[in-house]
Image (cartoon, rainbow, N blue to C red):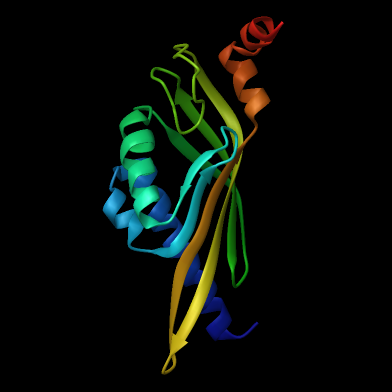
Length: 165
């Protein structure tokens, strides 16, 4: 691997970390948006919710994510893998389900339980070069959660199954 490729990988890792921290730690939607490609997809796969494009992502983050983040939300990285176009993090996410989470568990009322659940985040990137200057933009940010495990840990899996019966 060349030093230029290694530096590119470090740059996209930093972009992913900045976007993640801006949304989930700082609640700073505008900072998160500065690194996104115009057609970016931002999605939480467990709840099949998300947005595409800057304005839709701004609305999604401003209305559905940031005001509904649990106060004790914490991400612990287990592993990180990256190449020139992707950064993947395996995470353990811990939080107290003390409010509705339309970005993660739409329609599930708060249970008051504290849970830890496995998740994987994948940031995908596009690079453009102008006169030797490479610009990297996030084209997709997806967080995949183990939904069934999360619902079971929250004690709502049986309730949901009974409601469907």
